[in-house]
Length: 82
Image (cartoon, rainbow, N blue to C red; front, top):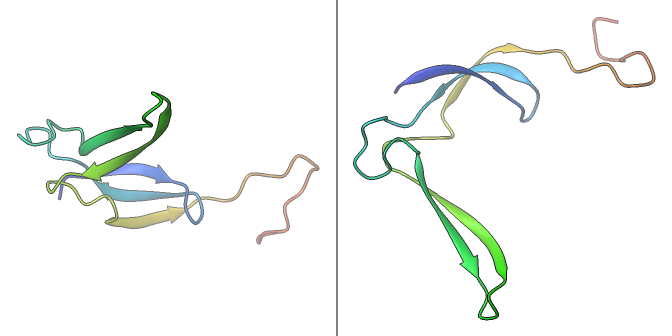
């Protein structure tokens, strides 16, 4: 594991220690995987897919500190502490 501190946004904003791709990986060259673009027979873009590399586990993280939600535009939040 090559830990880094990052902010994650799901299910709630938090600081977490996450795994990062291996910089010298011969398969992905540090990108963490390969993106595949799909094209229709008409030549139109039909979306993309990302295949993660074996050097990286993007689902492994340890939450350090949950961050408070942003105050809504109307003024106050009903989240504790009030």
